[in-house]
Length: 332
Image (tube, rainbow, N blue to C red; front, side):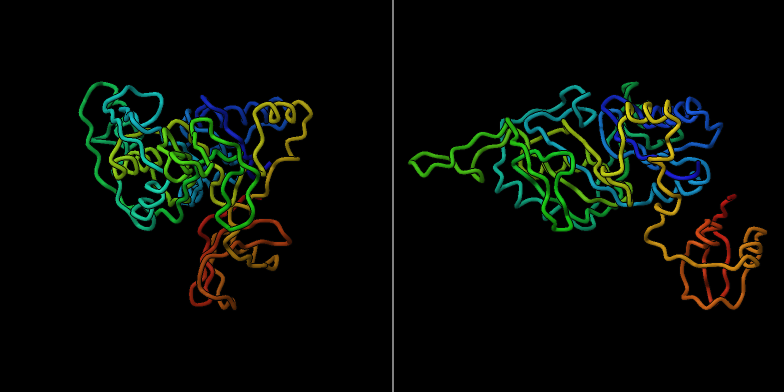
């Protein structure tokens, strides 16, 4: 059992609780003890893709933290909360409601490299203390701005299904109307078009770099629109190479554990390195790398590779001038 189990994390569950659920499933299924970790924190109020690393895959969990992610999120206009989501209390209000035209016009400001201030209610540390602990204690928390990249950002006057927007340009699943959006598409005098109707809330999809806070992004978009806002829905639809197509519910996890069939949903360790080419080894080369030795005279371009012997993972390696060094070895 070395690989990835992708959970579709439900509302209210913390990431560490997701790890505990997989540990329990492994135990209940009779698999024995394995190291288990998650590949990127997802807030309890968020849902969606939560990669869980099992066994030797835990050695790659850190790489998952550095991966890009895609989120659906809904911004409610008119109220800003202290936590920037629905859990907090109101700290600012506004009667201004933007139109879809206004929303779409402002998104260019938040696409590409941007600087953002993380939420006070975050896990970042200030003088050794978690920011959210200081904020809950009533202290004034001021976090430094950080540079992140928003690779793509799209707004929709409709709430999409769980697959939502597809940035690859492929056709997305049929969407559902957002009941908060009201308009009259008729051509009669006094009618309001979709682009002109004031919005109480809007759903967006963002493809972001590591370190991006969606709650901060929502706050800043609302402010740029001359109003305030907070996140009422946050769903991660992709984390690195993992998306909702491979994600399972906690009920499914429990069902498979009872049937001792977790292998059916365990993705190979290799999947987390889908952007890295493979390097095939001979038995002697594999043995040398497992001993931590350097391979010399390898005909491969410089860069990282996934070294394997007959499809068995051996190590994540770095090639430089024909020399191969182990970055992370796998005990398989």
